[in-house]
Image (cartoon, rainbow, N blue to C red; front, side, top):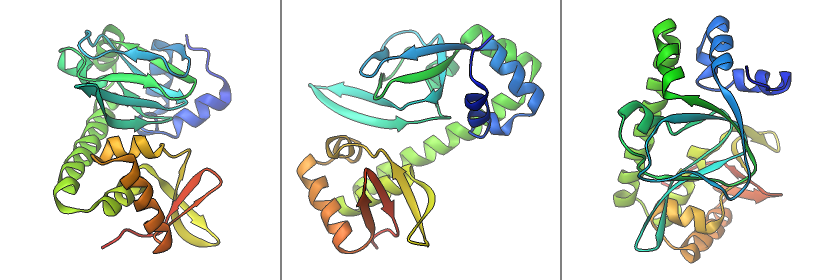
Length: 224
């Protein structure tokens, strides 16, 4: 049995993949999972190790990254409701990246055995994960195209928009990103430098494509 609070359960049920499951499947899945607390800065998935479990993020954020010649490449930053570690579990091969907790995290661990047992009883999780994987493949494809087609300012704006959620700013429609990545992290995600990202953010503010305010970024539009 898990030990999530009623508030955590309610919040988790609003996120994908849980929101795509019927109530009976959500309850059964939660009963198969175990709560794991991860402190900030800890690498809890290491590249090259067996993929024997995946994690649902209840609280906090994690960074998926890889290193080559001491240079870090950030593949994704994942937050509440997202799944991490699922690719190696599904493929049966070793992990292809490291995962480190950016903040103190509360996760739900699903072992390969429990995942396979759940799929024998319910089909909703498989469909939800297919949709999640399709979204991530589309994001990765877009990222590759961006490298060839757009300048740094456009790539920064597009990655911020991708990570944000619909909101408002002074009564006008906008997308907001809470606790945005550092300039260095953004640089690692779009294949640029920290200095270039800093200049791009200033230019995007000057041209009123976004506003940075109180630790949040509000995106209004993307550069052409």
